[in-house]
Structures are given as structure tokens and as C-alpha cells.
Image (tube, rainbow, N blue to C red; front, side):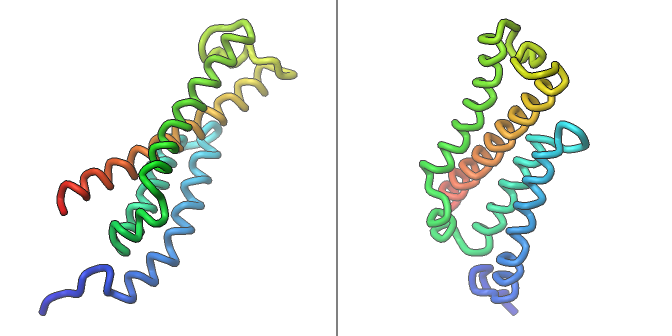
Length: 144
């Protein structure tokens, strides 16, 4: 017996709608706690991108593009890289070397390091998720 396409299977659609928000929430958790525990920007970005890719696999490319346009996925990639670079340049402006967090003007070098690494992790996570989404759409367009 031939199986229905994923887009016509009600159970898979319902489970995807239920799970994707939790997958994305877990991705944000992994990114946000990457400076003090296992995980970080790359792992969280992969989880975030995979959650969106699950949605696209279930509902189709057209529905996925309604959720996030090519411009938006490109902007995510760019914004993450700019966030990373801006943190490094802020260290230079503050009188240190590139990504020398202790030179940032906060009350203590430990606080400066903690906050800068937090921002770096978010930059990496946003970039990885954006690149994964962009690559999936590019590869999916080639296959169709």
C-alpha cells in the first residue's frame, strides 16, 4: 500500500505543529546557556534550523516560504555574522584586541566576558540557523 505524502498525513501535520515550538524553545535554551554549560551557538542554531526544516518537510516548500522568505533567511545569516563581528570590533574600540572581552567597559572583566560570550553565542546561533534554512531551500529547489 502506498503511503500518503507527508503534506496529506494529518497525524504528522498535527505532531509537527505541536513539536516545532518546543524544538525552537529548546534551541533558544541551548544557545542562551552555551556560555555556562554544554551546547552553544552552533548546536542551538542547528536545532533551530532543524525545527524549521521539519516544518518544511511536513508542510512543503511553498508553505515554508510563506513562513520565512529568502530575504529573511539571508538577513538571519547576515545579522548573526554582523553581531559576532560587532562584538569583536567593540573590543577593539574599547582598547583591546579583537574579541578580548576583558577590555569592554563593564564593572568587571568577568561580567564583560560573560556578556560578550552571550552575544557571540547568539550571533553564531542565528547564523547557523539562517545558513541551514537557506541551504535546505537551495537543495530542495534543485531536487524538485
